[in-house]
Image (cartoon, rainbow, N blue to C red):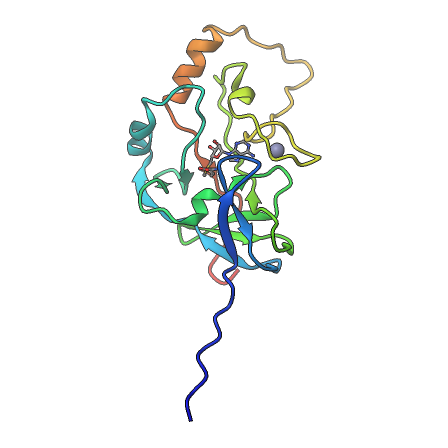
Length: 195
Ligand SMILES: C[S@@+](CC[C@H](N)C(=O)[O-])C[C@H]1O[C@@H](n2cnc3c(N)ncnc32)[C@H](O)[C@@H]1O
Ligand SMILES: [Zn+2]
């Protein structure tokens, strides 16, 4: 008797246009909390090399496929990347990025319904010399009620007694200089093997 062909499960997700930005990744079926959905793949390069690749970009274009692994390594999903590069940022995300053995994985932090867009918090780092308009350049369009309006990590409140130092350069020049160094997504949890 002939064996029945193995049952193929619907893929976990699909890539399509997103109301948030460009392409996004959407659950194709229910994804349980704790599921490792996909590894963030791409070429592993030094920070120096990643910076060089994006140095000619328009200063108001925040788009990159870079993900910081650690002080040494950045993953550039623009080269040999997979669908993980299309996951948009969300301020009230249903996923998070985890680091295991210097590899980045995207994991569901709650049960996700079919059709829901996947997102994780990019937590893009702020710098002390950020121009005043940095939150406009990195404006978030996730649509969450709790949207903080920016893909950058939440701003730290200055101590009550501190005064703001005057800025030396104009916003425009400063923005251009900042963007010579591309911003990368930051990992938000480090797991040990077996976590
Ligand atoms: C890794 S890509 C995500 C995929 C992207 N939508 C695309 O089609 O290439 C990251 C870029 O998408 C855009 N993006 C992601 N989430 C966003 C959000 N919540 N609001 C505005 N832009 C977002 C930003 O330009 C960001 O640098
Ligand atoms: Zn948001």
